[in-house]
Image (cartoon, rainbow over all chains, first blue to last red; front, side):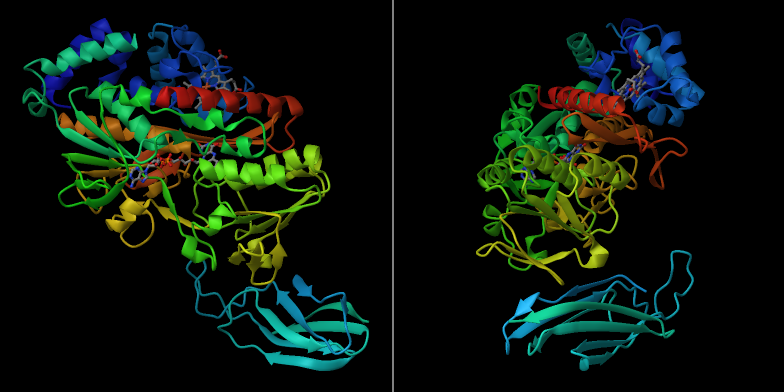
Length: 103
Length: 106
Length: 419
Ligand SMILES: Cc1cc2nc3c(=O)[nH]c(=O)nc-3n(C[C@H](O)[C@H](O)[C@H](O)COP(=O)(O)OP(=O)(O)OC[C@H]3O[C@@H](n4cnc5c(N)ncnc54)[C@H](O)[C@@H]3O)c2cc1C
């Protein structure tokens, strides 16, 4: 990212919580990771029919559920197969990103 | 024994030429290809195919490396009397695979 | 919320701080060929990330017909409306919409020629043209023959034709489904289709049978399909695999004969799916390098043969990601992000992408294969451990839940793309 652009996005983030996860070298990029979830969980995670919404939910709760799917303590049809492929940092970034989207 | 598929009509008129098909599921490794591990796959082929009708040899073929996997033989047979059509494949180790079907001549 | 963000980002683009390309006023021009799963997702994401870009969309069909969920039309689960979408929603995102087929593409100048003669130029080109069908690989098969023996592997009139033939068939008829060698779009698709045809025949024409002539030996989610076939459709489906000479070599639409090296079967309904390659526009432009599918950079999806040309979806070689609508849509948004980064003067960042292929083996019997993929400079690979299919022996509640989720997924994704 060019310096100019990063500065601009940092300002933007104040107004739009979820985008704040975009920056931060080395950090997991919550916004980029979350896009992969939209086809099932709806645009920005606002829900897709029978598949639950994630937008605006408590970040700790989302993170606990993802870790639970990953370690097998929470049953499910598909999340137990998807969740193990995300690192702890990515789970936190995803949870934080969805938590900040207006439901 | 390898898996085989044969096609012999159930019935035929006396004197009719019927089409026969015989296939064996066999890799026919020609000795020139490599496994995914990079080792040469040794020659492993069927060497002989024979078809008998009413106990008599009607087709006999000697196979060479270079014939593709799962070889199929298609040929015509003149139906004369009701009786068995028998097929036999022999691989390079002398192992024999057989199949047969009855042809009823009306 | 969506609106708010769009206007905010738009005003950002006007700031003098922004990258040089943006400061010029008019943004770069991007030409998109194909508004299917890959193209539509790309357009939506690029609009959001780089609103200043001028997007011209070239699409040959007046409405989009989705292959996902088209097997449900063929099996009579729902009618054709469910898989048919207007492009209006997508067009109204501020794109220039050029209806008609692109008939020529010059990768060096990035000029696309439309059937009417118009030439569209762009700074960047995105191709998501899907597949072309290799009719010539089967003796006697052709677009005309497909009017008698439909492939229904590109949705639309072919889907309706196959459905009609099944409805008009007498009870006791023989349905032949011919499956080509891989790679083809949607690895579990033929087997989902067989299942849903069986579902229809079991209720409406129980004396009929399905003969599957399959060039493949094993297939996607085989255990899961066979488990369902044994439970719901015993004796209805006979499959001849590749090793038993299942590959179809010739067809004769006049006599409805379908032939392998070993078998000649006379069908009442013949669904002949031919081998496939990248969309014709990409092939004709040489973007496949002669191998049938287009090599691309695994992070940006830029063609390795033509700079400035990005290729996604079925037409491209995507490492371990299968040719699915789900994958194409993921690639569309990742590619748009990569291009937005490029325009802003940055390097594209590798991502984690998801694919899930849901299959319905009956209306309430669903299962899936789901994986997360990592983009690296070397390719796109599934992350292990993790991923995989619904376990064998899953209970009825699990299959029913997966069927409901499959329906939700389809409605959710299609409304995001074309809604
Ligand atoms: C029966 C069946 C079932 C399937 N089920 C599923 C499923 O359940 N889930 C799933 O994820 N995937 C499924 N798929 C796979 C899915 O259809 C494809 O992987 C997906 O459509 C690929 O997207 P794409 O953008 O590459 O191509 P497409 O979606 O085919 O889009 C290509 C677009 O480009 C246009 N186009 C092509 N050439 C030109 C040209 N020269 N000029 C103008 N326009 C052009 C076409 O008209 C089309 O609109 C299924 C496929 C089939 C056949």
